[in-house]
Length: 468
Image 1 (cartoon, rainbow, N blue to C red):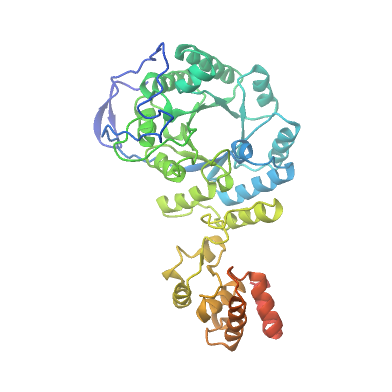
Image 2: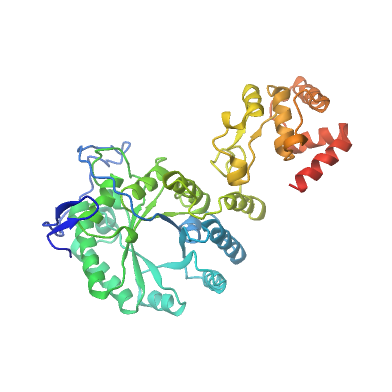
């Protein structure tokens, strides 16, 4: 523990840590019924307490696609896991901003995937595991050569009393015993504080975290805390009350339990559409790591999308940190083409319509300057040129834009909306809608129209696209 009074270099003032939070071993569970009565939408309460925003010196992303993500989807094959792992390594870049990836290690498929991934010899993402708190599982972690494992330490009374039939004191003793076993075999524990946004923060969370800090100081082995917003109850509103306040959770673990930023990780779910904002807020208030899955897959509403936090990192830090963001498009294409995944078309950054416009007047603006209607240079950053949908309202500007974008026609190769080819395509599409069509024209249909009416120019366009 630090001295009770010390000089804080980051704010240039004396700071006191003359306080302790002891375990409150209550007889009845505290279920925060004023917030969670179950018969109505959970209430967001405010106590108007504000904590300072002090971002971690470093931000990074951790992955749980192959653990939590698979729980909300079909099982992945070993080949798919290896391919996606390599893509994450490529996306994370030379600085390893995708720092770790979490695996199950129970089935033969799980074990084979871990071995094949580790055989690649890549530094990042580091392979970690998630286990049950049994001696056999700890032995398995050690046998497989893993240096870190996640351990479930549920912290709300919903879990402690209702699921585990324990008291808080019994739960804490059990958890500390499990963590000590990990330390004894030289494995770094990562404690998953399940359901932290419904837990008694000062009565259990902080006292337990403080005990973990003591064990860490005694052993010299880092102990991570993963703040699990299991049900997506976290909120980021200024002055929101615990246990739902994301910034309050992170600040308290740093300030009261003295857990350093590099050992704090946020793991959220999207039940209330807040998963990305919650993760970014955890970064801003002192957690170094946010835990994600590719495409946000996971049970119920899913986890925080990894690609979203890669973009958020760039927004907050002002650079890519060495990440190769074009790989986001490669990952989406792998899910769709190799795994048969159906990505909702309006999904930001990876959906086929995320940078597609339908209105003809918008297409005309895009022809003049893409910046007018495109969120950023999606072609340069994600290798995804902006597109327009062609329907009865597109007009010649929209058709010209589609041709240029679809075939990757640049500079003097670009065609103008007054080109006879554009008029021909518009004539053909107008005829479709005159017959009662209501859906947009597909890329294949538009290609076919051009190929049939202007075969030589189609061949020229196709060659340009292939050689792009």
